[in-house]
Structure formats: structure tokens, C-alpha cells
Amino acid sequence: MPVATTNGHAVTPALGTSELLRVVTAGSVDDGKSTLIGRLLLDSKQILEDQLAAVERTTLEQGGAEGLNLALLTDGLRAERERGITIDVAYRYFATPRRRFVLADTPGHVEYTRNMVTGASRSDVSIVLVDARAGVVEQSRRHASISALLRIPHVVLCVNKMDLVGFDRAVFERVAEEFTGLATRLGVEDVTAIPISALLGDNVVEPSPSMPWFTGSPLLRHLEDIELIPEGRTGGARLPVQWVLPTAGGPEERCYAGQVSGGVLRPGDDVSVLPSGESGRITRIETFDGELDEAAAPRAVTVHLTGGLHAVRGDMIVAAAEPPALTTELEATLCWMSEEPLVPGDGLLLKHTTRTVRARVGELRFRLDNDSLEHEPAPPRLTLNDLAGVRIAVDEPLALDPYRDNRVTGSFILIDEATNATVAGGMVDAALAVGG
Image 1 (tube, rainbow, N blue to C red):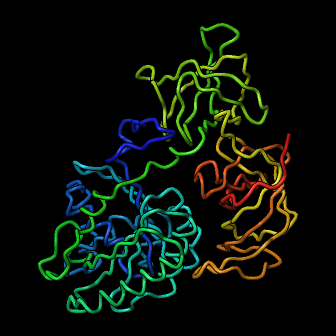
Image 2 (cartoon, rainbow, N blue to C red; image 1 turned 30 degrees about the horizontal axis):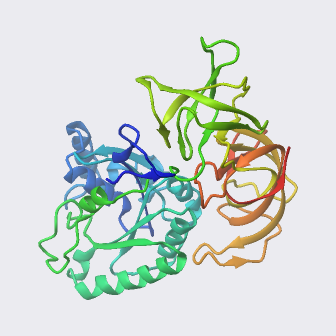
């Protein structure tokens, strides 16, 4: 993979992070998401013998006569197996000699839109499955829209069940053209279409002999070949403080631990601590393995600062020359995840990186059409799975970046203070009022 650069300096990827790819699968109910992941794991030899034996037993108990029920490898909830659909987000981890993967199998039904948003929020690649017989349907459009809204940089269209349409090239090309046009209109820059049969394994791990007309890579090889631009390594440096550590450097030196969430930190850099605005300089950057000459996102590090700086958990160490906006009011796009509606004026907790503050939701600005991302008139309240634009006021200043610039420092969650339940995920559109 190419080495990223920031401000003219070469950036060495953190150990192991360059091989990690986060993948989310989405699509309409019964398009074969769980079967695809099961096939991917099975054919890449990632299934343990006891797991395979358990799936074989369950398949026989269910009366399966046409091979393994591969969906059992991911549909782990009893309700999922009884209803034959995916309900929760199932995560699976595996590795090839070229790359490590985190696969998130997300629900397809509209009532579980919040689960799809949760699984996709940190993904690098979105795999959208479409049944070759049905083509692009409402849920396909919704998942393409959510992928675009969350700014997932790579989208892969898997036209599944090609065996049921006789591996017809014209069917594949018609579906691919329709979906690619939709994704392009939504602002997705990289779309790749692959014809597959998850049940039979065609073009999942190995090329399909039944589709010699397709000259692209099978799915796994395509995922291995995707070149990622390391997220968060451009722009100003950001280090949310997670832990304050003692140091032997005397009262004028303190050290702070956290995960770099943007840009690159180097010894000698001038930094500020927000929201206080105190300034200082980095003297050392350390990890468990020793000192570093630089630390790029998403590296977890400890930084030593001079200048008598004082910071606490929830503060953010930032590049002095490129600070984020410090604000007490913001505009954001929310995905409402609670069965209790959101009414303007409701008070909640807002958690942003390592900082938690009290917040109040003000004006509902608009609701998003889940299929097209078009703005609709604002409703009087938000209900489960609504996507909408809101204004939020917080009682303490937050250091925010727009979500389009940084998916970590531009996102947050809302928490019900009484139950401690997460009720919404949010993406920062703009900072409004500057706080001191």
C-alpha cells in the first residue's frame, strides 16, 4: 500500500493497521447476506472443525438436504434462526496472508435501520447485496443511501443468486447499471459490481467457471486489493485524552494517553489543550514498545507535554496551528435509535470521543428520505429509525470537526441519562456558537 503524506512528511502506518479492512454487508431481506459471509469464511478456511460440525448438525435437524445452511454461521440469535432473518449486527473476524478483516453482517429490514447504521459507522467498505431476480429494490436504495450518508469510501455491489437466472450476463449488467447510477447520484466515488452465487461459491473466493464473461476479481481478492487512504491522517492532529498518567519529568511535565483521532503528532510540535486553550509542546511520544518519531491515526499513544499544561479526561490535544471549532451549539444529522420519540427540548447526554456533556435538542431542521437522502419537512418529533437534521446546544464547549472532514471527531452519540441507553448516533454538520 502507498504511504500517506501529511504536510510533506511521510507517515508510517501504525503496526498492523494498514492490513485491517472493516466491511459491512447490507441488502434486502433474503438477498443472502448471512449466506455470503458464511461462504466467505468457509471457502477461505476460517471455520473451525467443531463450528462446522455444529452447523452440519443444525442443518440436518432443520431438514436441509441441499448442503450446509451457511447463514447459521452468522445468524446467532434464536429469533434470527426462528424467523430466518438477520436482526442484530453480527461481527466476524478473519485474516488472509494479505489483510485482516472485520465483517459486520447487518439487518436488511427497515425496522432495523438503526442496526445497519451502527454496523456501518466505522466501515471502510460497504457490500450491498441485490437478488439478481428482483434487481434494485427499496431496501437496496436505502442501504446505498446510508453508505453514502456515512461516507463509506468504497461500495461493492454483489449481484447474488446468479445461478437462479442462468448466470445471465445481461441480467447482471442491467442491475449493475441501475445501482451504479444511483450510487453516483448519492456521491459515492468508488463502486464495483461483482456477479456471485453465495450459495454455490461462484466469484466469492474463487473465479466462477459458470461466468467466464466476468473478467473482474472475485469478492475476496477485490477486498484484498482495495487501497485505503488511512482515515484521519490528513488535517490537524487530534488526541482525545483518555487517561492522565504520572511522569518522572517533574511538575512541569505531564503525560496523557489516548488514541490519535486525526493528523500526525511529532515531538517538538506545538499543541493546544481544548477547551481550556492552554498551549505547550510535545517532548516525547511513547507506546508499550518504546518511543516514536511520529504517531498517526489510529495509533494509541502516550504523549509528554511541557509548558505546565493541565488536561483531564475528555479534553483534546490538538495541533496549535489547525484547531477544531470550539462550540456550544451545533447542527448535526441524527439517526434516532430509541422506541421513545425525540421531542424538541428534550435533555440528553452527548458523548463525543472521551468527553460527555449535557445537551438539549432544539429545532428539528428536516427529515431525510432514507432512499434518496432528499430533505423532507421537519416532523414534530423523531421516531425509531428516523434520519433527521437537528440543532443541539451543550452546556460545555466541545472541540468538533465536521463529519465530512473527520469521522471520529465529527461523530457522537446521545444517551438517555435516566437509563444510560444510547438513543441516537450523530454526525456533525457544522459548529454554530463559539464557546469559551
